[in-house]
Image (cartoon, rainbow, N blue to C red; front, top):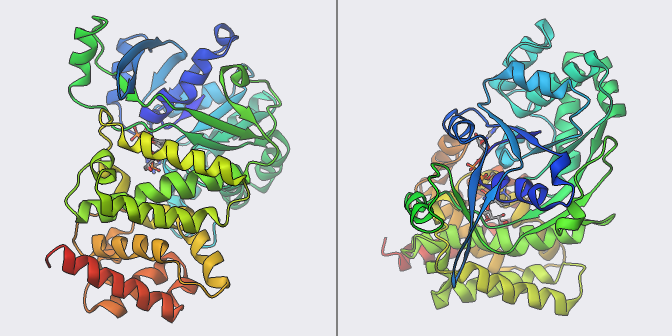
Amino acid sequence: MHLGLGNFFRAHQAWYTEHAPDAGDWGIAAFSGRSADLPNQLTAQEGLYTLITRAAEGDRFEVVGSLSAAYPGGEHEAWLDHLASSDVAAVTVTVTEAGYVRSADGGLDRDRPEVRQDVDALRRDLAAPVRTTPARLLAGFAARRRSDAGPIALVPCDNVAGNGAIAVGVVRDLAEMVDPQLADWCAEHVSKVTTMVDRITPRTDPGDERIVAEGPGWIDRAPVATEPFAEWVLSGAFPAGRPSWQDAGARFSDDIVPFEHRKLWLLNGAHSLLAYAGSIRGHTTVAEAVTDETCRSWMQQWWDEAVAHLDLPAADLQTYREALVTRFANPRIRHSLAQIATDGSQKLPERILPVVAEERSTGRMPEGAVRVLAAWVCHLRGHGVPVADPRADELTRRAAGPLPDAARRVLDTLDPHVGADGELVAAVAADAERLEREAGT
Ligand SMILES: NC(=O)c1ccc[n+]([C@@H]2O[C@H](COP(=O)([O-])OP(=O)(O)OC[C@H]3O[C@@H](n4cnc5c(N)ncnc54)[C@H](O)[C@@H]3O)[C@@H](O)[C@H]2O)c1
Ligand SMILES: O=P(O)(O)OC[C@@H](O)[C@@H](O)[C@H](O)[C@H](O)CO
């Protein structure tokens, strides 16, 4: 099963399943977050869709057939029925960083109104409709317990370090509020799988339907375009089995941390830098921003700081950096900076702050990281692409007004230690002033 039926899942987990040699033994029932458009369209196409692999030299087309059913998120009964079946061995999840509804301490944000509503609903009836991801998972596991369908693997595929522990943790936090015995059942039956996922997959371009019609000649109302590169590293047990993803290129590792950090800091960190600083400089896509010499030098500066804290061979990291420049510069992938800039409050703690903490603990001022934070502050002050963030109101309020104080108020929301670091705040404020000056405001 999958929760978070969107473009990335279709280009990544569904594609790995399609390419596993035992693909014929498996199928995926996928549920959207809420919207019905994509699941309904996919159902009308019998779950089939075109994956366009978009290289700089041209497109390759393939029909992916691993999706056996697609449901709007609201179809809660179907969700429970599937999870209650012993045929289901694993549930993969892509619901964005914000979808895990965590508080600053990393656990479930118990005070969020939607979490409170779900707790009340589940206390009344474990099969009641619920909205948040932790509650949907918990309700599904309760249905599985009722039907005695056995263990299952929980496989989050969002860009968050330690995503396995995070997903299991928010479900456990919720279970303890709803039914402690269910928490015990989950501890015994839900296997935590941690993953590093990578494949740049932007929103579908409106012209892609026509490209598919004119290329292979298929009528497809839901194609998805992605880059040629794909990587999946997993760590954890699958007690009820899984497709042979390793034969489709996935890697299983007991030590996933260096891979997670390499990807989140180098790829996603650079993406965030380009999204905020690049859009302030007038760019709209990653490919445009990365051809700007200034943005590129800022990116290299950030990478120099980040790689110093990665426990991987230097030559591998250099190769990875060079490949990233090529991937970002792919002129045929239109990855909008506005899409990447969303939810900065959830992303920057993953992508930038671990390096800031390491650097500051040695007394250094990481100028590359400072620039990312400064560009985010400017973004919250109205520069570059518009703000879209679950905490947008609070953040834009904090970011308004004279700069050193505004920067401190904003950084405080990411991590109170960061907000309390006077030298860092001053450096971010000075950089933000510079960026605003250069942007002509
Ligand atoms: N697109 C990429 O290049 C890429 C690469 C690696 C990882 N990812 C991960 O996958 C996630 C989804 O990316 P996508 O490109 O598929 O996006 P998308 O917008 O195409 O699909 C996202 C899906 O998640 C659901 N969703 C969104 N917010 C939710 C929430 N708060 N609670 C529950 N469901 C929610 C949506 O309804 C939709 O079904 C990213 O946030 C990221 O963590 C994406
Ligand atoms: O998907 P998000 O919103 O977490 O982040 C935007 C991009 O940085 C991200 O999607 C990358 O393209 C992806 O992580 C590449 O594997």
